[in-house]
Image (cartoon, rainbow, N blue to C red; front, side):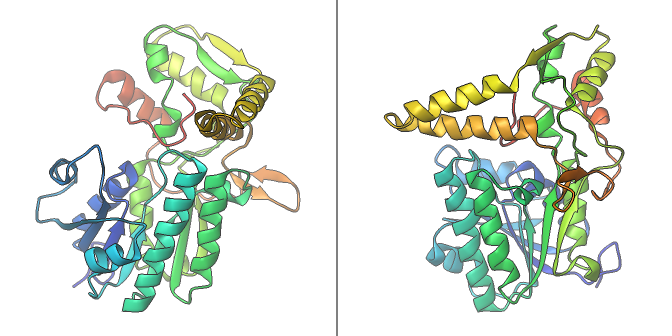
Length: 336
C-alpha cells in the first residue's frame, strides 16, 4: 500500500507529538495512512487523558504511549517495546531554552532515542532542528548541534530539518495591536529578516522526508513561501490588517545587552536570575540575527540560499488571528 504521494506506507515512532508542529506532522501522517505510534513525555501539569484529548485524528488514529523521554529504560520498554519501525520522526524540543532543559531534551532525550532506534534496527531518523544552530551561541543551540553530529555519525539514514521561523513565534504582538498599543521594534526594525513557515507546511515537509531520497542524509534548511520579512514589515502589515495607523516603539539593542549583563551578575547569587539571563540572551539573539541560511565564507545571511516550501504565509496567519478565526499559541522562545 502507498500514501497519497505514491510512497510506501510506513510504521513511524513520533516524538514531540503534543506540540503544535508535532500535531501538524501527526495529522499529515495519519491522513496519508501511515501507522503512527506517539511516545509522549509525562507532564506534571497534564493528565494522560487530557494530553490524548488534544491529539488530532480519531482516537484509533495513532497509538499513544507514555514514559520518560530522558530514560533509556523507559524509551526502550514504554516507547519502542522492541518493535519494528521504519522511521523515527522527532519534533521534540526543550520548552524553556534553559541550559538544563536544553541538554536534557534537545540532546539527552534524543541521544537515548537514537541509541534504541539503532538497537532495534530503525533505518531512518528524521529530526526537527532549527536554523539558528548554524551560529550557535546559546545553550539550546549547542545541545541541538551536538545531537545533530551524533545522528550524522550514527550510521542511520538521517534527515535533519532546520526551519527558519514559526508563525507562532512571530505572533506575540498581534494582541498589542488589537488593544491599540505600539509595535515593539529592535533598532529600526530592519536588523533581521526571516522566511517563516507554518506548522502545517512544516508538518508536510517532515512527512515528505520519509519517501524523498533527495532529503536523505542531508541537512535541510527550509523556510516558508515568499520573500524574507523584516520586523518592520511585520508591523506595517499588522497595522494595515487591523485598520490602524502605524505606531512603533523602538527598543535599542544596548538595552537588551544591559539587561543580560545585570541578570548574569545577579545570577552569581540567585539561580532564578541565571535562568532569566539565558532567556534574555535568547531574546537578544533573535533580535539581532536573521533566520536565514548563513554564508560562512561571505559572513552574511543569504536569502536566496534559503529554500522555500508550502503555501501559507505569515500575513494570512495574521489576518486569521485578527478576525478571530484562529487562536494564537505562543511559541518557544517567542520574544513578546
